[in-house]
Amino acid sequence: MLGGLKEKAGEVAEATTGAVQGRVDTAKGGKKLVDEGGLSARAALLAKAAANDAVVSDKETGKLMSLMSLSAERLETAAKKLREAAGMPDVEGIEGKEKFASLADSFEERATAYTKAVSLLTGEMEGPAFSDLETDALRLVLAQEGYEWAYEKGAAAAGAAAKSVGYTDASAA
Image (cartoon, rainbow, N blue to C red; front, side, top):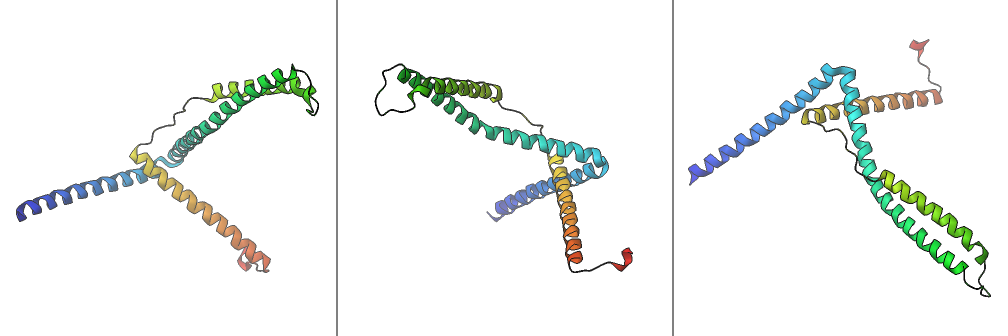
């Protein structure tokens, strides 16, 4: 019984070690890709990331497309009811009926525009795929850019603070 447990524990440890080593190798490969690929690799990785961000945002507009479709339906229904009511006899106390026909025209025009927009913008976009190596390389690039941005902002803030208290760097003169 103990022999079986030891054997199972050894298998789990071996599998875990293999997975960890694979992950380490991928991370090293990502760093190598960024280091050796230079600006071209950074540009390609950031372009792929931007494309995928755009695809995610585009998917979110699906909610807007549903809302636009619903608005088009409601505008068409309202236009139909406005035209119907415009053709009926006037009723004392109902104001603005003389505008019903022109309102119906504008509602139909808007509904048509929504319907066209939905038909043009419906459909799923596809972004570029990332390998595990590229994903690690992109994480490194984003971390480096975040550090550079934070450093630049920190230096600018420190310079502004020093200037506001009248500090001048004698070595800069």
